Length: 406
Image (cartoon, rainbow, N blue to C red):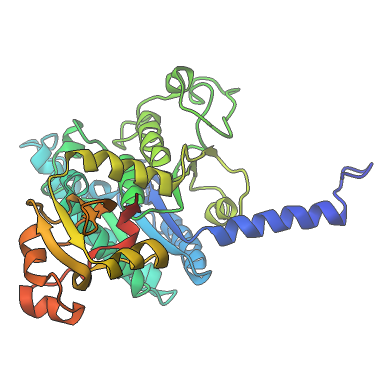
């Protein structure tokens, strides 16, 4: 209870601290998207923003390193490659009349800037003894099931060795973002990465403090919306495109990212990367910026996706009684040794049925191997898989994390 002097007593303080500690401990995997203005906020003599703002980036890297030291896995989705690339060239070069507005010219700037970004990340994270790994992905990589699995497996491996993945849209081959059509920006990319890796939280950091009831650039009295339980028509009206024309996102794309993330079971926060210790405060459960709670749990989201996909599945594997027991009672993955027969054709990444000897549905899940591969390794020990196939995606034919029991 609050005292007459407006202070909290020891009991309430303990409860607040306990809730914050519980919130902090519940977060295992966090995706942090860093906006263009945070990374390339350095200004030249004429007041134009060009190059990497190392002061800002160093502060953000220090916060991420602190989360890393606290045992959390952090995936960084970065913007700013085009802006960083401009600093590499002279003023005359990057403004060359032969096509500074063309997609190819911006792709060239992105290619130059990618190396500058990674050098900065490598140096700044290196000050904390943390390795970084670059991961350039495109829209198709996260919408096609086989590529989706490949991206997930690679990022999981990076996290497993204790490194921080630095993810960015592959601007050199994915023109949609630079052309401003179809896919768009790193806001939605970060939501797709969060979904792919089943993140516990997605944080979008930019220069804006969150979602406001009205455009704060036009109305200085506009109030911030601290929580958005549901994205309604009125909430959409509050969103605008990028205010300064520099980023490819804006609040509208952040709302789209929020819809994707929350419908997949991942809560999201929009906040200002200029705020002091913003990442620590968010992860401690403090009300910062605008929070979008998850619409459903991640487990429920995956179940819905798998169960919906199973209606179109033409492939199945029949398993023995030992495998049925391991799946149902022990929470195990499906290994090749427990598979008796393969029915139908399927590719790596397809949703397949897992049936018992009576053709009763036991579970469904994502296939790690194609039907042809599974037919070669069925009934064999896990140690024989690579020798039999000549390639290896893991010992599991269907991993427990990508399976739902029926």
